[in-house]
Amino acid sequence: MTDKELPSKIAAAVALADSDSTQAAIDALLTLERTSRLAEAAPETAAICTELVRLAYTRQGWVALGEMVVLLSKRRSQLKAAVTRSVQEAMRMLKDEEPDQNTQVRLLKTLCDVTSGKIYVEVERASLTRSLAAIYESRGDISTAADLMQELQVETFSAMDRQDKYDFILEQVRLCLDKKDNVRAGIMARKILPRQINKEGLEDIKLRYYALTVRIHVANGDMLEICRAYISRYETTKVTADTADPWARELRLAAAFVVLSPYGPMQTNLLHRLSGDKALAKLPEYKALLKLFTTAELIRQPMLMSRFGDELASTISGGLKEDAAGAVLAWQEPLTQRVTEHNLRVCALYYTRIPLSRLAALLDTTVSDAEAKVSAMVSDQRSLKAKMDRPAGIVAFRSRPAPEETLNTWAGNVTKLLTLVETTRNLIHKETMVHKSGKATPAAAVMESAAVAAGGGGEGAPAAA
Image (tube, rainbow, N blue to C red; front, side, top):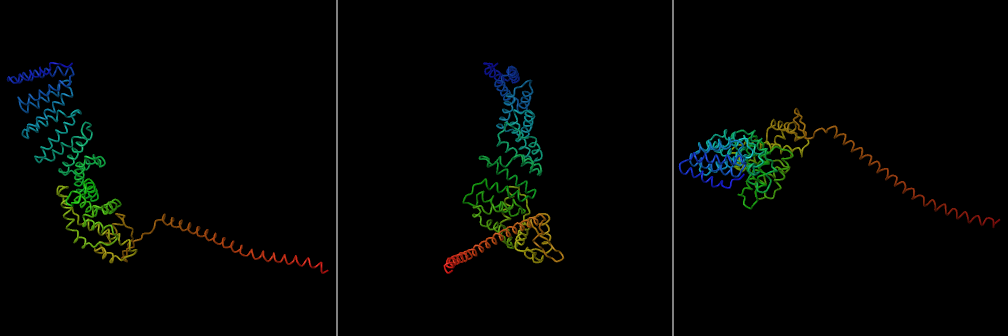
């Protein structure tokens, strides 16, 4: 039952501390706490626990505060509201007073132990763990900070706000990347689905998520995924007339990495999407770069590097410095490979047979490199259909059709032949009918005139007789 005189009893107990009887005040409040706890009066018990925490700190310091929170949490049949309020009060005092780091670490560890395994204080535990990890990170102990953050699976915390969950998970991913644990970082990043953060109000979360995604894929050397991340960041920003705004940076990086990405259906789709973007007209250099790779014409490697090399180097190094913690990515060799592959596909459009020496001259490379590239595109990447006669040094860009294709071709030819025969038969029949009807009319006229003549002679013959 609720005690109406409880506020006055709490005030009287606190007054004992003012007369230098701190222990007596604590004992009085503990007695009141026991009474309220056994009566299952949650608000009153929580209020008494809050006063006990305050009193322990103001009279006995931080160590006493931690011990008081532990004592209150371990009392028999302790109410959830009492534990929650005690922890929250300790966290508030820790934030307001800002003691030295060693004291903070000791108290944070104590509070983490108190909240461990208690679902009703899971949000507080997440906040405490993050604060403790931040202290270790400031000391340079990234490994310990990352391990602390990984202990919590916040995606299962039902009481935690969704945006706070995303923020906590992204912090886990960042610490894993700082720890050089890229595999675990990739696993944790998959806890956030892109469609979940494509909502209004989550723009900052989305930008952070894709920035961390860039760091993960830079470590793996996955150009296509880096391109997709920058396209998502570009779609999050707002296009303006100023090319110094964030949208222009994201679009430059997306255009650069789509060129560096290996050829495939997705890469082709992204390449044409970006080249058709109206905002790209405000970045003429990148519009011209994408036009080279969307046009069926040969690209001269020296010309490409002299015109776009410095711009690409500046864009890629600047972007990775901000988004990938200064990671270095070798982009010159992938660009050379993409240009060679593009030129090979162009040659396949215009040639059916070509000498290797001529092909190497068109690709700006040696005969051995051209031969190796053709073999790789045919056997490994399966992006080119060709056959090579090595003794003769001839490349044929037409492969032997599969048996199914040959049968389909034959079936189509038979169908066309039968249709042609049927059409010819109908035309012959039509011509025959027209020819017969044309001859039938004169014959009838002759027979009719002959009959008339024969009838006239018959009448005159008897008369003559």
